[in-house]
Structure formats: C-alpha cells, structure tokens
Length: 386
Image 1 (cartoon, rainbow, N blue to C red):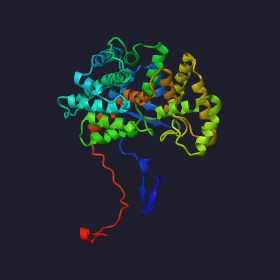
Image 2 (cartoon, rainbow, N blue to C red):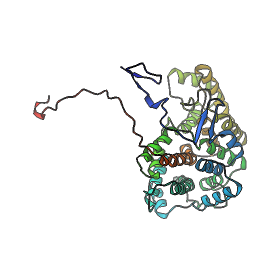
Image 3 (tube, rainbow, N blue to C red):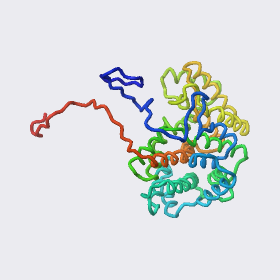
Image 4 (cartoon, one colour):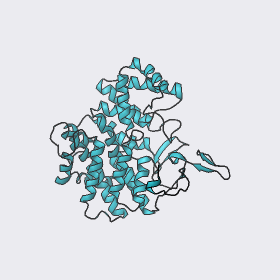
C-alpha cells in the first residue's frame, strides 16, 4: 500500500513525501527557523537583530565564517570585495549580446556560467578556494545585473565605484545616483533578510549539484534557475503585479474575495516553514511603510493592508517576506523584473555557504522514487505492432 502523506506510515505502507515535505535530509549549522521564538536565525543570531544592527557585508562574513567580524576584519573584507567589482571584457560582451527582452534572471544565469568558464582551475574544490570564489560572486553579480539593467534601457554601462558600500554601489550602477540613507538602508535590510533560509528549493538545488562533485559555478547557476520560479524567488515580482492589478485601496477587498473564489494562486502569502507568520515580515514591513511615506505613495501599503486582512479573515494565511519586499523595491524606482535578481544578490551568500558546507562532508544526494508505470512487457517487432 502506498500513501502520499508526511505522517508516520503503518507497517507495510510506503509513505511518499511529495516535495520532500517534512523530510530531514542532512544537518546544517548555518540557519534555522526556531518555532520556540518564531524567528529565523543565522548561526544563532535572530535575523531581525542582524537587520537592525549589521550591514550586509557583516552578514555575508557571518554566513561564511560562523561568527560576526571584528572591526578590522570587516574593513579588510569590504576592501577585498570592492577590489573585485569588475567584469572581464569577454563577460561584458556576453551581457551586451543578451536579447534586450530577456529576463534578467536568464542573463544572470548565463553570466555566472560564463564566469565559471573564465576560472582557470574550476575543478579545484576546497573550502579556501570556494570561499574566494564566493567573495568574487558576491562582488560581481550586482555588476552583471546593473550592466544589463542599463543596456536594455539604451544607456551606457556605469563603472563601479570602490568608495561606495555594497547597496550604495548597486543604486549608482543602475540609476546613476545614490538615494537617501533611508532608502539605502531599506534595501540593505532586504538583502540581510533574503540572504539565507535553510534548505529552501534553490539552496537544496545547489547542494544537490555540488554533491556530484561538480563545481561551485554549476551549483550557483542551477540555484538561479530554481529561484527564478514564481513559487520561489519570483513571487516578489508577482506581488507587485498583483498590487498594480488591484490599483486602488477601495478595490482590494473585492479583488481578494474574487481571487479566492476563482482559486487563483495568490503570491506573497503562506510559507512551507512558517505556519504562524514569517518572522522577517515585521522588519521589512516597517521599511516598506517608510518607503511609502518618503515617496508619497502610501496607497500600495493601504492596498497591501486590506489584502492581508482579507486573506487572514478568509483563510488564516499570513503574508511572507515577498509581500513587502516587492512594493519596497518598486518604491525605490527599480524595475519589477529585477526584484528576483536582487534576491540572487543576497542569497549568493547563503548558497555558497551551503555549497562549502556540503563539500566539507559530502555524500551524493540521490533519493529514491516509487515506480507507478506498467509492469514488465515484451517488445514486439515493428511489423506486429498495431
């Protein structure tokens, strides 16, 4: 007998855990959602505290080293990252040749893969070498994304600046100017909240790939492909499109009721891990509200508030991080299809931390499946087949 469930099976039953729901496949030291405090932690630090007190580079260091950096370590680490903010002429040419209609996630996926081909020794796999590659990936991915951002608008690529922080430099590269400190801080908070989240779909994808002893670039390229999907990273884009479709606060409740009646997939709500609300939401919501105040466009938060209240009333389903990051990025003046690539800019730290952890005690990830096809059959000669 076969059952599709996550509960314990009766004797003689085969339980299939669809989507690996509830299956523990390995251990990790990097992060965990702790139900007892309803908080995501990175190496034990609640993510909301990291977002309150740290810059993104501090969190990257934490994910790669297991401890927060000291002042001198942080300065040296920031300087190292800034020194790597350049792309080869060949890689820039790849980005220039990308169709202007391409999704930026597709461009990033291709650019990271090309970066792997530029590595003179990609098959050397040890923690020190992969950490060095991780720093380069973190430094270069914003440059890749910003280059395409400019090109598709018919504008010249802006070179990176070594005197700007990680978040400041991204705005400089895309928009040609650095916004107010409050905007930069809201963006940086989103990066910290997005940096890591356990064995999510894209992180698990990266671990599966490198468990074959493939290289770090293959793992990251595959993770980008996984993150692109609207059930994972692409949800922040769909949230903003939903808000634009609703249009006005007075339409929000009826829109949600009709969407529920039609059984539409409503992005930005629910989570496989959080059952009583995403612990990252209050922090991001605060900064998104501030973005609305700064821009004089509070209507998006008014719409979001009504959608949230209606969903809670009708289905008792809470919003997730994407529900607030989408409108925050929109209010910053960033194109909607760049929201998920920003997720990549942040999650590259978590992905590479997991890749290094996987390779430190590697075992090929190879689950089983339950066959439901025909029984054994004999092959008939072609002339006898009807």
